[in-house]
Image 1 (cartoon, rainbow, N blue to C red):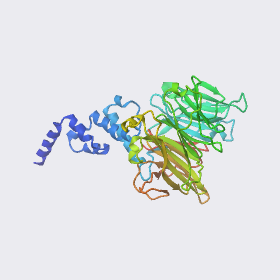
Image 2: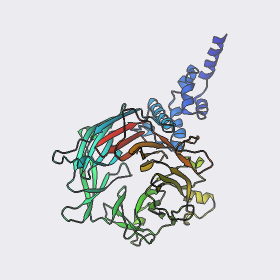
Image 3: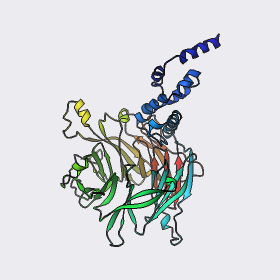
Image 4: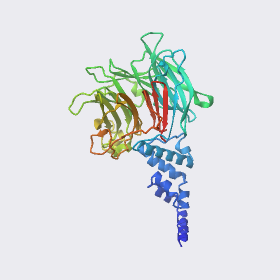
Length: 504
């Protein structure tokens, strides 16, 4: 009797059209879709439909502004098994990063091999910057700047994570700033400012690309152009546009490295020369943070409009950074990311804007972290609200959350557009400096007791210490980077050690 009922149930489910299955699965999470496979053969067959996984990814991953883990091709070109694999890996990473203590699934440690016998002092192996980037043919590269004179390139291999040396670039002059292009498919991938040996006391900016060698994976550095005497410190690289900031004048100079056209954005005059902390562009706006202010500029998306006038553009909004008592603050670290629509459940009614994380030192053993929001109306939303879409944006800048971080010192922060990120923490205990990494995830909304206490009624603690294997120790960390699409963290040290951790 029971067997007959099961057979009848299978026949009923087998007879259902695919659009009914689409409607059923549209209300389920990816985990529930996987569990449904064990109910009957009809559901097992239904979960093998391509549109089920395609829509699940659109709704639960892209709709939440998460990055698909290990995506190598456009979604439209992926088969059903590939879509399911991406969905499962991405949700596994999301679960791991939102855990009480995120744990790497694999890791590897290597030594930067560019140390030369001609300089045994070890200056060359002091890692000053690490950057994860996409290579060609689906490869992943790690760029490692050492001692200010050399860049080594490593190819990263997954499952389990490992890396092999793939190239290097040596420079006779010290490198000052290195920026990756924020447009992944742009021809120019790196902008580097360095001292000009031919003219002591002067500088130049070199724009480079990484040309493929050996099956399209191993890169060779090729110089595209050189900008002599840049107008300040290199702060941003976007497409063909390079951004420089000069403290003495308070000017942000934007240069198209191909046409040499220039535009200037002027930071409001202040009693002291402003020190740069962060810059980001989103929805035709520039978010710019100095040591004591947040500025918002209008940024035309059309280059003809951007470069049509030589008159410096002034900020649309200026927000001084002060304590609750109105005392000016001095910010040590800042980072800006666009916040997506999926954050509307966490943030107070944003229309369009950016999220700003700031950190300042309040005493030798404690720091404060601030979460500021920059929000405004975009033209479509203005029309929906009956406002003039051509009118100036109604920009609001306000502090959303504040935390006291003790006894840790936040040495570095990396933050992705999904809202996830990592923080390098250093603390003195027993006369020794202890270092560790903490994961940041705004989706971690349950209450956890710990050293970070947010001044908000919601029991929300976005920081969680990352759990390391027993024989992986952080010591002398000098640089970190985070790849949200791969669920990967890389740490460089003052002794040339590189540790790569995968969490997907």
